[in-house]
Image 1 (cartoon, rainbow, N blue to C red):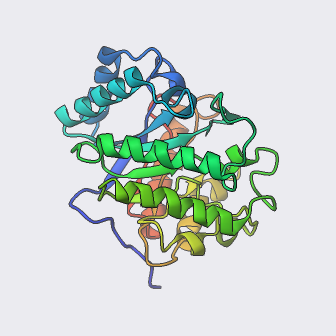
Image 2 (image 1 turned 90 degrees about the vertical axis):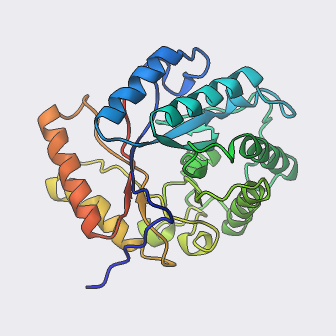
Image 3 (image 1 turned 180 degrees about the horizontal axis):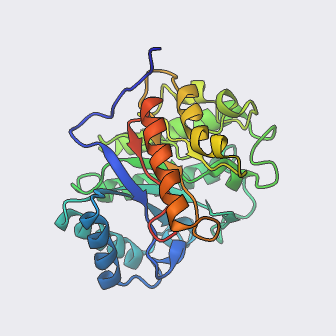
Length: 294
């Protein structure tokens, strides 16, 4: 059986982790501790991890419609420099209004639709362009992600299923990716939506993989099995990777994992070993589990 095993351009294979500091989680930039971050990155590097996926928590990075928080930007500068010093790289994620089951709005959103309100789209475009212009030449930037699971942020009740317009979603992605490229960035780009489109789940949340494939450089599935069946737990991610043989694009398993609240260290190790091997056989060529501090 022929499987897509396309790889991202460049010498590196993306084997990393989604990153929060243990001091702060998604709010880590408010109380950024360079010494703790340096320690955490060094532990990862010693274990062979050369990549992180990092998150620009949107309400903090953009506290007003027409301004960014300069102190937080400087802290992210430091974060990038610490990656470079260790020979590591990171993937900045821009529109972080959802993470780990919670939604957070910028104070200035005022109920505007994420994809169809022109003024709100303009502010997103400006935000993405400003951050990309600041960081696109930094050697620690490996790639870019527009969002984190934005179908849930756009409509948490339905997760976007049956409520988001596919044409508007595709136009939104094209607009933000256009800003990244216009700012001079050449690194790989994807959406960060979880690849939960109708082609994978059978349910249309507006993020149609076939429509987005021409715009992006890799598919980034997020796969968490919500059951205790061993076969589904171990093979579910590989099945999704098989389904994402669309457009000849690389498949980077952008999120997957278990928590120590539900799994022992021994069984977590079995899970990761199974998923890494089975998704490799299913065509994945990059892996970023969730997350370094559980």
